[in-house]
Amino acid sequence: SKEKIRYILQFFFDKGENASQAAENVNSVYGPDTVTANHAQFWFRRFHSGNFDVKDAPRTGRPIVEN
Image (tube, rainbow, N blue to C red; front, side, top):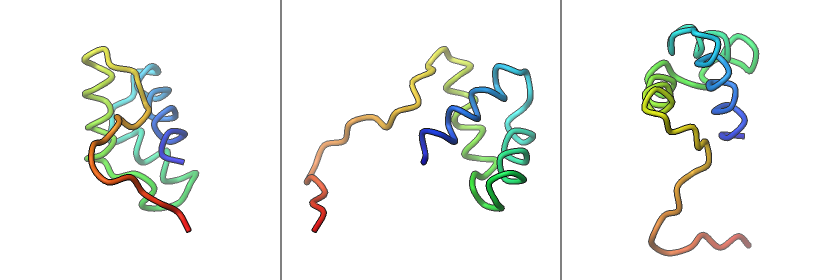
C-alpha cells in the first residue's frame, strides 16, 4: 500500500540515507517503479520539515463509490 511505502521511506530517512538511495532500495525489494526518486524526495522534504504523517490528507469533492 502507499502508506507502507511511506513508512519504509521514513525508515530510510531516519537512517540518514538520501531520497534517491531510499527509492533504489525500495524498488530493489518491491519491484521497479514502486516509487520514483521524485516521489521519495517529496516525502523526504515532508519528513525534514517535521511532518511525519504518512496518511493521505482528506480531499474535498465527490466521494468514490465502489460497486
